[in-house]
Image 1 (cartoon, rainbow, N blue to C red):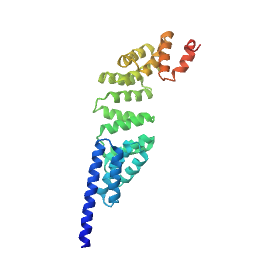
Image 2 (image 1 turned 90 degrees about the vertical axis):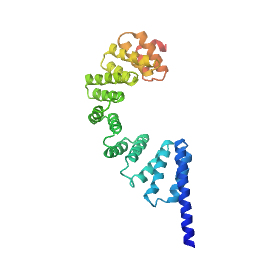
Image 3 (image 1 turned 45 degrees about the vertical axis):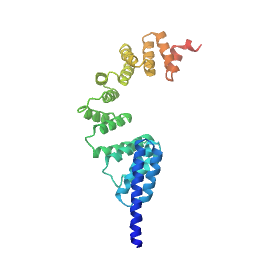
Image 4 (image 1 turned 120 degrees about the vertical axis):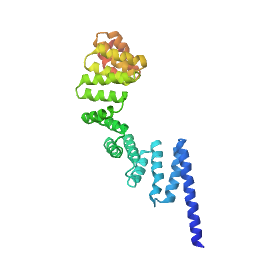
Length: 271
């Protein structure tokens, strides 16, 4: 008799856990992450992680923790799940996202590398890796990844990032070719204009730079970075009054780097 009762209770317990997990999934879809975490925690506690299937809610709870900004707890759950399901690329992607939010670039890249090993044909992952390598100054590696993606995909952001790589490798002509490609692919992508304008400024090609920056300002007349770069370019072209006006707007909008130029070239503003 006691054996019958045991299996009856176990069945009820499994049904309750299934219901909790289903309710938690619904809450996740409604972005009620804290409530979902509570239910996933109940499921995990009830299962004691005795079987591989019991790790499923751990993975889901890791996402819920991630979405609520509880990155330490999200990482803890990811680290519990991954040894059981090391072949699941999405788990490594999640861990890469978590490390990214935690500012650990090294671990982020390592997790991303593992995901790419599992999904080598995923162009978005390769592009992501290239972007990380660009940020870390690994320009040759970033170039390799970006070119690999470029062979199969037209992407304005990719072209801009590749332009940054070429410029960092002191290949300005290739950099501008990429930035112009980016603009052709998406004429509304402001970042390409800003980088082109800033590169022209560094190369002392002020008139050409202003042309790019004016296009950025056509898209967004309140673009503070465009005000800043154009202001400097105007000053270099001896159009000091115009340049000072733009630098003042940029500084008042929060571009603190404009202050040094204002002090040097527009001192009358501070009298």
